[in-house]
Length: 193
Image (cartoon, rainbow, N blue to C red; front, side, top):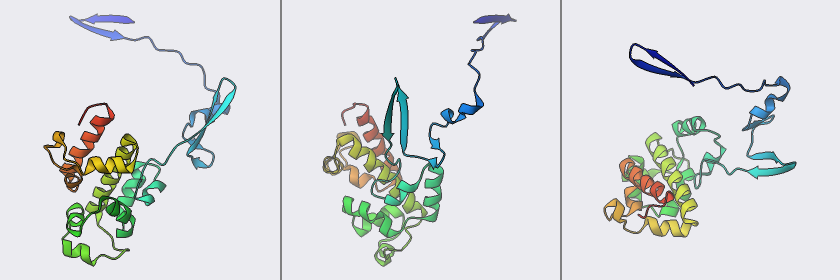
């Protein structure tokens, strides 16, 4: 490390690290996440003469299966702008046993609007975003608790960290959903909630 002193100030400059030259014939080694066919969910790792295959689960979507087609957040954003249909979010609604008034609160519409929805009805952008975030929370929670049943028990139990509120009721609003998400994230790191 080289140190420069100019007018009572100290500046440090690190020596540049020398890296080996890159062979243009081996550029494919740098495309970790993209193969010749595009993005892939299976990776082959060579280690000690052995080849190991790893399969990566879809990043997005647990109950909202259409999200599993998205490869990145930009594609998720496009899907949210196009809005989910009531049919796409129905498995999530059934898992949470949501009533029409609760669906209305989550989608920012009136209960009478919800009662007129058919399976092909668009739930709107705010509702699509809210259900996307709820789906992500459930995916993380099931991963943490090990099963849907255990996570659902936690969702419907009063929680001291959330002011003795029931997480499933809180997550219908954006603020409440953020609180529940932070609580689940804290549990991931070993905090007791």
